[in-house]
Image (cartoon, rainbow, N blue to C red; front, top):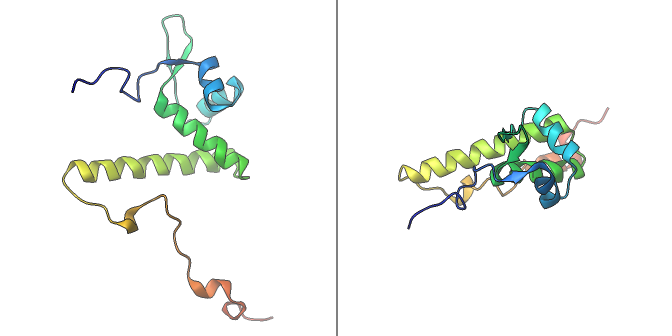
Amino acid sequence: MKTTAFDDADVPAYTMGRAATMIGVTPAFLRSLGAAGLIEPQRSIGGHRRYSRHQLQLAGRVRQLLDDGILLAAACRIVTLEDRLAAAHRRIVELGGTLTDDDNAELPTQTHPDIATTNYYRAT
């Protein structure tokens, strides 16, 4: 099966206005992500910003974290690390490795059960 630019998540196909509408944010929000260093849109010949589907997925995830009360710098760092982890997982599979359920980054990490008990902290 031949792949096309439509299949490539990294093709900068969306104008700033269209990108902002697609993920429900303002153009200023997208510019702030560029200033924060999370995404760097390509530029058209006329100098207009163009965003890829992958960049819009990252921006949408930052928006979710901000809605949850995470600060912008922290949200950008979290999204960067999530993206790198997903890329590493894809590479492991490409090289013939396998991932277990423990490798699923979508599942929350279990905390130590003692941390939820009052006996964990000494009374003062």
